[in-house]
Image (cartoon, rainbow, N blue to C red):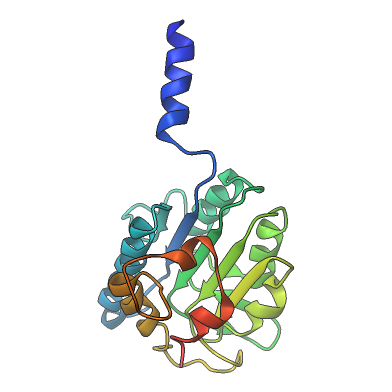
Length: 204
């Protein structure tokens, strides 16, 4: 066997072709009081992804702004397989805005609009879950909804601008019970099989 074939085999063995991906985006805190809770929430989602054996990608925890977080988000989504039996999770932690027409998620640097995310997610033909834990996040539902997707937001209206605390239960639950809605056993079934009703259980 040639060295090239050996290297290829090792690469394929180390990286499963079908693997759930959890892309965690921690947005701009705005003020210092939100830095710690945002970071903690991102850490809990990371733990849940690890428990599920999923690939975990994170944005928002680097000191450098080159490339910007918006550019990194677009790049990481472009690099993800668009067809797979395993789920892609996009988790947005932070603040949002809505001016009556355009809903955005606040990033360090340029923000990302729901319409832009819709364009970047359009090619995906795999199970897809979008969890937007930001304020003013409701308009993301109409923009991102499509067959085979679960889209959950922290607010029922784009005009709810206060800090959204409802996602805290999801973050805590993900670290302690692996998203198991029955809270029995230590698993992370929801990572590989997203369910809107299961996620919403922890948003009340």
